Image 1 (cartoon, rainbow, N blue to C red):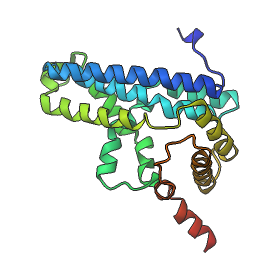
Image 2: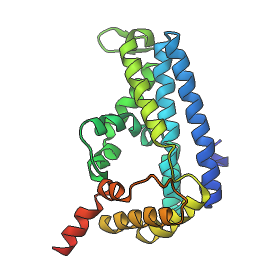
Image 3: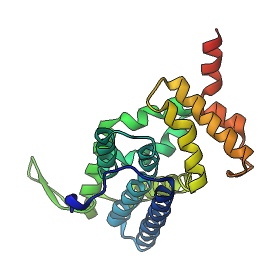
Length: 233
């Protein structure tokens, strides 16, 4: 299958179609997880909840593919698209919000916490398979996963999947995203933040985003104002 997997650039139209398909599948996985939980099938509730998080986690990676040019970078991003640990960070998303994360800088550690990503992958494996550990201990999914844990993981999945469905999904939005983000991609963080703010400002001006979006809240979340103040000091 690897020989037929795509690893080239994407057009905004193709990326938008991909986001639509990914969203549908993530919601389908989540619906199955909810059905299993309602029927006391807690092990597989965890399995499918994590799979839903990993599936919807492909969307930010697709957006980054739109900003890449070199084949070496495209190979790396497409590999991330197909690597479980690179997409399961969404399991911690609501925890960071609850712990007081107010802007993009507060969330950046979520993406580089490899130990937590590995723990999620291990939990997924334990929810599916039996295993044998040192100390003459067998791991059995029904003994590892209880109702409380399943409910917690399911809630995290519901929160994250819903968060990813809001915007930056249409062809028009993605074209504008490329316009503002490609010139500053992987450059100084203050330039990237400014590019994100400019994207939102023009998207609202062109009425291709929900008019209820508050640009000042966007600026605070991106932490754009503090950077601007720092630059002027």
